[in-house]
Length: 305
Ligand code: CP
Image (cartoon, rainbow, N blue to C red; front, side, top):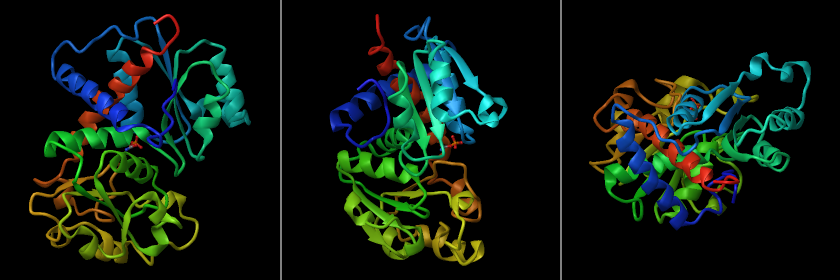
């Protein structure tokens, strides 16, 4: 379709196509001259209703490297603060004829709703606990570059699965690409019916990490926790925080990932985050390349392209 709302529904061929295209941009991004002209004359608006470091900056860099005029809408100082709704904000921006809208919103389904109200391409940069498709793509690219494949790998996704759009997008992508997906979490941090997503469920790190090729840690999203999901941060780290002792249960050549932002000492020990098995910085590098691939492939669907 014209938009990228989620990994759900994308075929293995479509995913592989995006990853192959992203590989070209990884090379480009390591050169001194990084510019392409695919989006020359086009306008990209980044509309982030939630905080972001990685996603917003990499979408801005990606758009600019492809030649687009990129505008970052500052929601904090916008008329959203005066009560303007999401849809009215979108319709207002749509009247300025953007070609691409990149949207992050705290409500699941908000980006798909917005996409139905505007004429331009819409890219989901994270909606509530629903999907964060470009994160799953950059994770897949990172895995493929380090392991040479995705199919047949055992990937353990650990921690706050309940609140995680990153987990949902990764589960969908990894299943489509033929990986074996596990989730590891206390019962309070698992969504009901998680088994129906095509994952094996574990409630201890020791069992869930056994023989895993990839250990993907999730941030404990305390800003989304109204009640008591965990006894205490100290206890959470003790049972579910990734440290050297727990990582030993995984395969000897296991690699560690985290989408960021990290809570060091909460879901991951600093020594592991900065250690030899960590891919966390590479994930950030892949983020720019993957977003260039997504924008580039959308550019081909724009009118008069
Ligand atoms: N991984 C991720 O989406 O990070 P940001 O919230 O900083 O964009």
